[in-house]
Image (cartoon, rainbow, N blue to C red):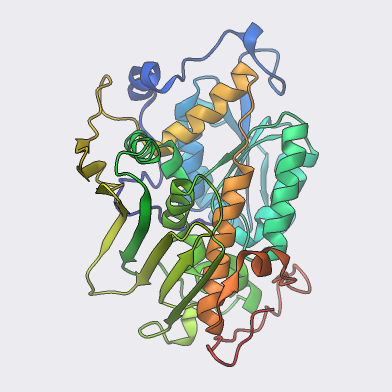
Length: 436
């Protein structure tokens, strides 16, 4: 079960994070120096080892495993799981080569619909949840019930029922003093954090509007094999099926929507409306997802976010967050402000600026060792719901309020988790489809 490409403006390391040496050079800046065992929190072995389990062995999953081990010298990868045996074997070969003696999986390799539970039950302290988004609520529930610390990739669900479940689960995690760190990685990027802090402190006056652009090319697609059932095919190609990915507005554009939410101090929008469709990716292998969306989000204070995303080949590409205020403007990913208070972020720490994919794991492992839990549950749920309500506004042509989205009974769970028939593939049409 793989996770798709991360934001294109960065330099994600698909299979391996930076070396331990480069990490230790950066740790003074990132605050990641391992603490003595006496200061450790719960869920650690008698020695200084933290056992990590990986659930979802695609490119993002393998990257997350490498980032996690780069973040803490005491971490070891001790169990892995994927839906499919061939993906599991590929991950084992790659990760054992990359991680060396810190790859300590032995026979703790599991595949199938119940593989996640076997990793959780294998004695790990931390789980990395990097399977297709549909399975996130199920995997979160099992991990929290078992008392595991969690790194949770974005998005956290594909429907309102899943979002509500994760919001409730995040409360349980907090009650149990468990760490729940989100894969919304820009929240941990040093330049983006500094820029947004400036904006929230009034560097451009009052924020009036935000333009979110995530205009990019297409992603991977896997050809069907004769031995596959419909369920095999859909899960292998999960990007293109709404019940598995939530469409690319949810799976990919959520990064931009999350920054807009962040700039509104994590207060959700009051309503949204928009348009979208399938103009280029019209073939059956692209399932039931759209290839472009444009959504207007409105907040109760009158501010708006104009959100545009597209996955098409041969077109103008750009990923940036434009913020317009009463005293200036800003480009968040460029880390610059223009107007009354011009400013440009400059990294002043030792070595190269730390990678945000490492820093989110640095935060997780430091919190475990400090005994000061992090819980990103609320904002990762709200950002996911922003994506879902935007998707449904475009699918239906309706204006949708936050309350309607939060109270919707939509649940895209299939009748059964088994290899055979899969959910119906139907491209939804504005004007005829109604959001429930």
